[in-house]
Amino acid sequence: QVQLVESGGGLVQTGGSLRLSCVASGSIFNINAMGWYRQAPGKQRDLVAAITSGGRTNYADSVKDRFTISRDNAKNAASRQMNSLKPEDTADYYCNVNITDFNWAILRSWGQGTQVTVSS
Image (cartoon, rainbow, N blue to C red):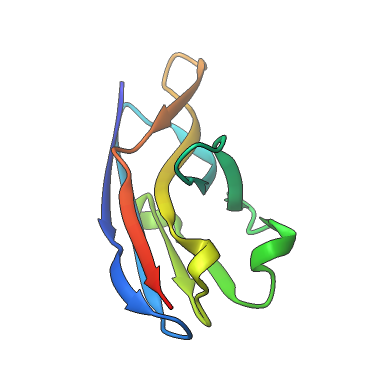
């Protein structure tokens, strides 16, 4: 089992910044990738940003040059800095990890989600 604890989020004005963090714990041999998805009301959950154990990153086109994801492998943690926030960034953000456990099983786990609201 993998547990994720998310922090950050909240209310910010257009153009403001927020930082989200996610820490994984449990039976983890290796975290293959960590990232965030977001889901706005009435919409599907989409990938926002992800980072592999080797540091390769992937961003949704809508957040490129505004969001930056980073990772601390020693702490099984990832952070995401969100700058120049727009009202359309308003959503529930979910941390997601893809891990290999000590039985060599590949597992995927979701965080509880944090709300980000950007006021216009």
